[in-house]
Every structure is written in C-alpha cells, then in structure tokens.
Length: 217
Image (cartoon, rainbow, N blue to C red; front, side, top):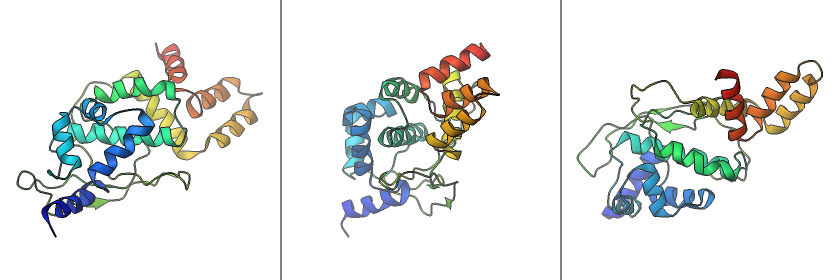
C-alpha cells in the first residue's frame, strides 16, 4: 500500500470517509467553494488542500474538527430540506465563530478523540462509542463520523445556540408531519403550545429565534 492510500485509510478510520470526499460533499448543499469551507472552519486553504489530497492525515486543532462537524450537520439538514436556505448564511456565521464547544442533540455515531501520534500520522487506537441514531430519509447520503472535539469552558450559550438545540430536539423525536398533526390536535385547547410546536418543530430558525427572544428577552 502506497503512502497516499495508507493516509486515505487512516482518514476513513478517523472521520468515516476521506476528508476530500467529506469536504466536496459539503460544498454543494451549502453553496461554498473549497476555499469557503476552509474560511468557515478556520483553516488555511493550502492546509485543507493537503488534507483533501491525503498529503496530511489528520486535523490537529479540535476547534477546527468541531466546526467541520457542524458544517457536516448543516449540510445534512440542507440536503433533507430541514433548514430554510435563507437561514444558511447565518448558520455559517455561527459556525465560523464557534470555539470548539459545539454539540448537537442529534449526533451520528462517532469516534472518540484519537490519541496523538507523530505529526502527520493517524492515531494509534481510536476508541468508538455509540450515539443515539438519527432517523433520516433512505436517500440521504451517509454521515461523516468526526471525532468529538475537546470541550472548552465557555460563557453561557447564545440565544441562537439554544434555539438550534431546541429545534434539533424536536426533529430528533418526531417528523415535521407528526409535529404538525400534534399541533392541530391541541390547537383549540392550547393555542400557545401548538404555536410553540410549529415554530420550533417545523419553522425557520429566524422565526424561532424571534419567538425565543420575545419570551426570554
């Protein structure tokens, strides 16, 4: 096995697929170029190119890994129609400003952070752990498995971060149709609760954020 093939195999073990395939899969749904991906995740374009061509194996900065994971999640939502295209620029800005403490309420199966080996080399023995599965349409492409970033001590989450967690929670436990049916069932007796279900379960992030700020000013 030549060095490039070996590096690609190590990237697959680390991230679920080679980084070149992962990055190329993100560009279309999010309307980004390869350079745009590099800018959002906080990496130089030449470094990202080296990773995509398997000249390098792994991303050394946990915050960059975290932002790449967030981009993967956002691209998946865009591909299955779970996010309004008008909300994508604001979500990209939020990812760009993330510090590495990024978490999702609907994670995919991931690999735990690998032990560090020599520079440019893969991990020795990554430790897998199982996360709750996400139910997605059968036509959706497989999700990347990125190693969890090292948590950082940070300030209280922003209103947008809280809103996205609430939205993700709703979408993890029920489909849009189920949420709409539930809202219709209780609308007559509990209109405010029905509105909450619709806004956070099926609505746009901007509308949910406005609702949150109105009630938690």
